[in-house]
Image 1: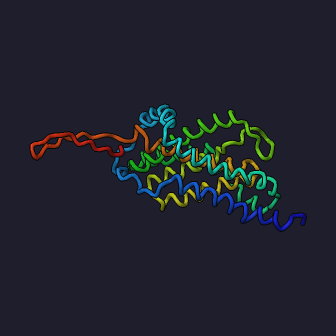
Image 2: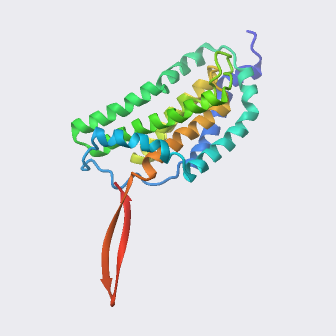
Image 3: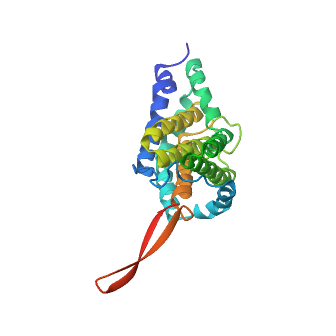
Length: 264
């Protein structure tokens, strides 16, 4: 009744399109189209829970790296651009029952507890089925969840940005977006884009739901997504994930040592 044509458009396709386009650009920039981890197969023994837990404190230190700096630099730049539309998006959102119902599951799916349980489920399922790749994927999701949320919460309580709805002052960055994108990028890393694309779409849906519900600004979800991707890269790419094999070589009157680095 009282909605203008401009407002109605913003509540539907424009809102979804704005968030989706921003996160699509971020994904293209931060998640390379690399092949899945070649060394991870179902024949690989599942990692023990002790080995997984031992890596978690080390992840906190590994997160502080040039790679993380580059990822968050790109994410921060994208968030700065998105900040231009923060107030417009927050101010134009009005009640739309259909869209509210469609967005509601995103708040549950993106919650840290749900994403962490997803990792626990995959890890447990991999152990029971003796599928090392599935168990390792679950373990990496658990580690990425804990790592991303440790830094997200620290930033939230340091920045103290008020939410668009005024409910509290822990808006930046979005924890839901960080959790959803951490899981999506881990799945892409292990299984490639066939699994990564649907997971990324689900993560984008979570981010859109948070903006639509006036819980976050656009810049919050963009930087939250970057935090999740940075956590995944820390867990799957940094020290502790790769092993070095030294092989002596000789020939033509010369001798040396060949160093081969491969995923564990």
